[in-house]
Length: 318
Ligand code: UDP
Ligand code: MG
Image 1 (cartoon, rainbow, N blue to C red):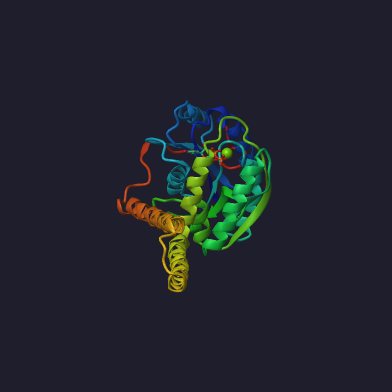
Image 2: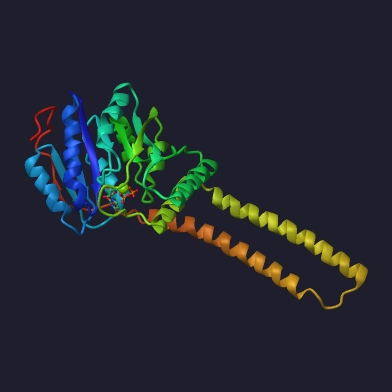
């Protein structure tokens, strides 16, 4: 029977973990596959790890990996996917925003021959209009700036085939914009649509600051267009400055040159200065990324590892 591993990153998810696991295993019981679940405790400060160990004691299909500290969701996911040895892996959030009941539809598409089956939400329940607007803006600019098509309204909730997993494992970059990486590997990809629910309990770890960081990461990891933008801004403003210079010169020749022009001088200096700082910032952004990559640090460290005791098939759980 084909094997499926469900990878679940969890950071301070003690409040939902039990109900998540209940819903997940109910779904897995129904699947005609050998299933197991791999929880990644991303350095939680609550009793998430204890809960994972408890689940493992009750359900032999459950495994866990505890990272040495909080590395962030992308690293936690990577740790999980690195330890999957199955024919397919499903990535799902622990907070029940991704309904586990959708997994059979993902599996169906995989068995129809797709390598990456991603879940795309049709509605964003419980999210503000502002969040929706910023998300739309982000996807729009990604589409404009990069050749990698990141599917809209799609999180990390998806299924990966064995060869898609193998491909993903070869991407060891430190700036991990997973949605982009998933898309970048190619192969046959398709979407399954669902209704995204609001978070069941606990707190989202994404405030606007972190979302903005993620957006910058996404764009700089998959596009060098901002660097080119800096060049074009430079070209454009020098051209303007040249034309303005001609005008100033012509005016001085025709009307003479009484000492005027302090305001216009200031405007030009401030404008050019601003453009230069912006361009330097953009270059710095890429340089910083280069620096992080050049250190070649491992993506995560594992503190404890508890493999699943059994790969249960339908009905064998608990
Ligand atoms: N998560 C993680 N490490 C982190 C932050 C989040 O492993 O540093 C996990 C979290 O436990 C959850 C998933 O990533 O399972 C999504 O996190 P969250 O719900 O906070 O993000 P959102 O759904 O708001 O995008
Ligand atoms: Mg969430």
